[in-house]
Image 1 (cartoon, rainbow, N blue to C red):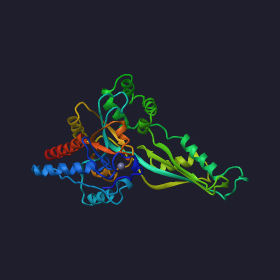
Image 2: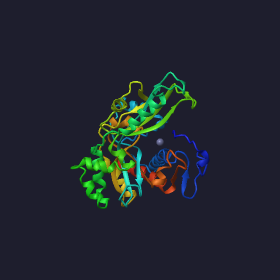
Image 3: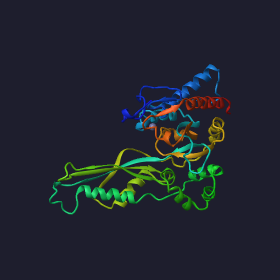
Image 4: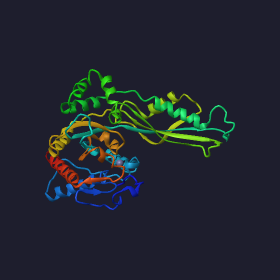
Length: 366
Ligand SMILES: [Zn+2]
């Protein structure tokens, strides 16, 4: 299983690959994302085998080795194999949503977000070339100046707000757990979508639900303060909402930059958003497990803000759930892909239990 790299080893409480286990936590890169899930599945399968469970449905375990770098050598090929064997899955379960506490505004109970699709991903590279020369005779503008204006135009022209059906469903499901005045506002989701979308866009965490997001992430150019740059480039990362596409992102960039001297192209691998994410027929199977494992939890739907391996299997399964019952607060959420990644022993045990219960339920499905 692959994990993301560690770039601040010194900032960690324990060495990131030591696999330290103390009284409360299992520490290390991958403790959440995603080794805990793999090991919990193995634990659950071994338990079930020991107990003689014989699932009525076939269970496939598919572990990729390259999820963090787009999964083209792992999940893509496993999905292809399943497709060739004409496997039609009833349920696809993968990483993505967790249970959060104190993160969702105005909700006092823990919130289980079972993700049912994902946003698309694209990074656009903007570049400008110039003849260069001495900075004492710069002409009207330099490559750095032109590039800076292009980035500013993209930043100043965000994608339009849109309340997708899955966002409406999300609001409907959490509404009963929310206090006023939010409760009333959420009730307007179907009749006054634009108003609700604007309210959600007020915070970055919820803005991601209602638009394709724009994030200029890297910029570079020039070699010396008194030399005209011959080249300048910038990268802008987009997370694409269902309904928009990778091609739309490029078209949008070209339209708002309005400068033929700025070249605009995709950088690296891009992925399209799930076409029409919605809770599938077996959504309640996973929702019930969440309620059973964390009593009082509010269960809702969501969309993974980034790409997961599930996109390769999406067309093979009737119900897609990206979820694990790991309970996290806002600080915990910063740990994965960050410093001091860890999972509590309680969460890890719950994760094993979740997988075991799921296998038991599958044993009785028709
Ligand atoms: Zn990851």
